[in-house]
Length: 463
View (cartoon, rainbow, N blue to C red):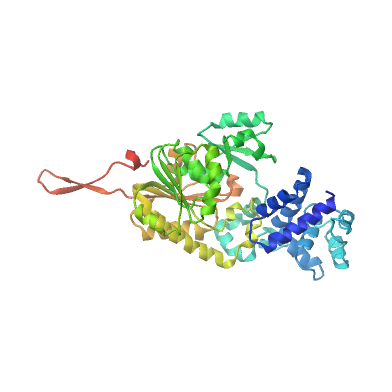
């Protein structure tokens, strides 16, 4: 493909992303499946143009409004602006790509010519811009993000706007981290251990993962280090009864099965049977044989009532704004609506209220999100504890010591992982433990005395 054809494809896909609700990576992947003639360099160039626009859309729109003489901030004009500001193309290169020849964009109109000429040599972002423009996020989110990050807002937004590395989780059912790293090296892939997760390997280059033996044989799975840590902190042990309440396509289900060494009972639930079905191949590849998939009609499904207080661990990776994943999904920020925060917070509270019914005395409810907002994280935990006095918050440092064993990167009751400080996706984890039942026994006088049970889940102390 010529550079112009690559630009035309990017404009077409950006327009499709803007009009649709599907994630950008799905739309781009479907395009490449339909256009097999596009080689690896073409795919890289087209993706580069697309993600330059998605990552810097607020700044591009600001410049179009300032220098565009009334031009609309649409896919074509954002792409033209990104070519000059983000990719440093010259006006001549833009003209050569946009000459109207076959498969290439039409030539620049007079207003577009003025825009491209005006942007040459300008900085994409600067201190003269509003905070939401410099940080490339919707302006209505400013107050929420400022409450979450305070004075570190600009640093955190810059980190969330950078390109993420590829994080892999080693499948302990099939290999340890060094064995997986050696296997990757044999396929000419350099991978470094992640600093926090003992199961993580980080790859900085683009690789054809699906074509590698180490992936096809189930030694590794794609999973951000923050997500790996969330699953590890569940402390799911062999022989336990565990439920992944919002399992989706099964990423954390796989991690929990490996922690349990394929011994015990693990149920993957979701209100989308389609998402659960997508996990089939992943479970088979990983060798996770203890997983039972159970679609729910809603998070208030009768199944929950029938299995009340019967699980040692209930993992709730709740639906959320997903702000912590913006470096991987920059298009998601532009699909958020102001009402989403309150609506999602209400949904999270309802899911927690339902999921807690599954937790047995002495068992744990693990609440996780990939959000950075206090409304979806700390505020949810505070509300839950106020409504459920039979639960207590287990200090995260204690859980970290029991499960990971290294120095915990957080103080206090919960874990908040930051992209700028910890180089993971933004993640939040809280561990909530249900009080054990008190046992009655006959005293010497024949009257009942009460003493607390000393056994945690599966006959072990909860630690």
